[in-house]
Length: 173
Length: 455
Image (cartoon, rainbow over all chains, first blue to last red; front, side, top):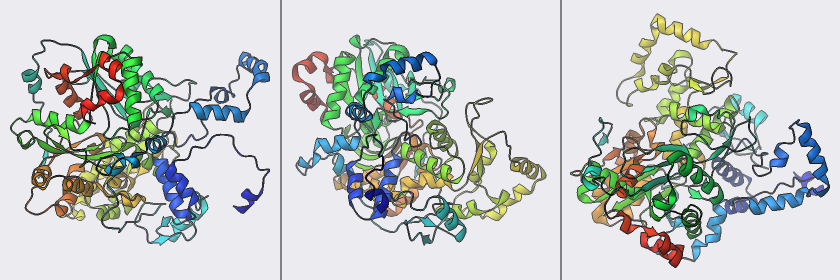
């Protein structure tokens, strides 16, 4: 992890990353595990979870693999005034619809007087009992063990091996 | 006590009494859900059209398309989706305008300029979103007038009209539990108004459950992360609510035919079938033989599986058909809906549905408590999981004081419950008077108009 940070030449994706306030808080916190759970919960509200690379607005990029000759020609002629990737990304960010959490942040509901019911106050709040059942992340059955590195659960050696091989630390970056 | 409304259709009597279909001014009723848009004409019993509230792009296309109401025509395999609604609220007005335009012009075939619109909006919609909605309705589409309602109130209205002598109608009060696509609300309704200080919300709905199922299946067997529509279908067909999780987990662990929960789903191959299907529907229903935890032990149940034809079938099923992509589900079938009852298991710091209901009731006036507990109405697509109501009652009973009754009513068609309430309201004679008209909107603007709806 340190290597990535120290290497200034590493090419970063120009794709704009939108981060919800909750996520941002989690990223700032040093606790990797809360970070991982929040990221996971965020992912559950995602529409196209499997297609993170697909940018719905960016039509030019999506059709690059089109082997239509005329299209490629046109593309080249246009290439002189082609915007830089960064400019394009910025433009997309402006056009892109905003996340609900951003809108919520903007609405500034905290400024309302305390007796007014609002979105934030309607949340059900934490459960009365803190006991939580744990299920093995590999097979789904009741689990007794926690991965010491990433905090995910597993129930047996067999599942531990699978976990270590496939996705240990996957959600903790 | 748990009652089910799945009786043969009672006629939509209340429309007959309220609305004699005399001045059929066109009222379009639009239940704009995060998952599905339910739209139709006021006064009718069924909405004219139910379409997913999204645009989708199949693999074969470069453009995003409008889903057709008969989704059988579309090839939804690996389709990318764009939804105008995120976490239940409108975040992309441009996209929503597109979808509504398509809906009104090609599906409902109405002209907005001489129709009124009854639109549902989630509770606690932010003012900025309300403004955006009003802009679409009046400025882009040009509706004559608009009425905005919240869904619990409409569900209450519908249930009260269905049984004019029932408790809901007589006490004029109910607790509507709306477990929809984006979130779950427990909302007390009193005298046809939602008591918004009592509303409690869990941030879990059908979308999160589908995504959770996707995640589990993708990790354990086949990668289905980009198959939202297919996994929706899997969820609807195979998931159920467990009445005893630890017991069901044990059953799910068994091997071979003792495992009453294992079930295979065949993914579409795009050639012979474009829809996924459950390989053996009988197999999928076997869990129903396991009744309540104290009803009967399992040993009896397994006897049935010793019949030769059964064994033969099992052999056949065991053969892995290499021409098809399929996956097995076992404990996922009940662990997915389980999250609504225990969001904490997922790592969410939120109480489960039963506790959510109790908190919603407790925030109301104490005199209302007994009545609210006795008139819980379940609505929303996610309540369609088999045994949802039984499980809810099981969890709720210990949390409610002994001397109160708990009665949970399920709707006959929970997805359309809100729409039907809207249709009923739209056909009431003083509906036009409650609307805000276009000229009022132009004169006063969105915020002041909205005051009329007490939001």
